[in-house]
Amino acid sequence: MTVSSFFSSLFGTIHAEAPEEPTVAVTEPQEEATAGAEEEEQEVEDIHPKLREEAQGSSKCKAATQHFVHCQEKVQSGKGFKHEDCVEEMFHMMHCTDNEVAPKLFANLR
Image (cartoon, rainbow, N blue to C red; front, top):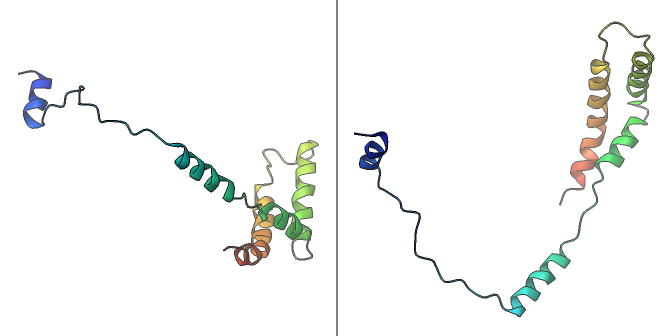
């Protein structure tokens, strides 16, 4: 008994040639209705990047943002510690900005 005959005995055999179903021709009024629906959907502007920039410059997050920028400058200039990558500073900054942005962002959801 071959592997294919074994599986055929367990499961039914499916043939690739199935009868074709008749296709329905699309008429012009349906195409116009679809085009009209696409025009009605308007792209909503993402306000998250704008709110995040504002939060990074706010009085609450300004110190964390400056600390992160200073760390990046130090590492990129080669004056940082070996294997320093400023990840901890980035997390502090993002935590602060996300706490500032979240209430404003969720208030704009519909």
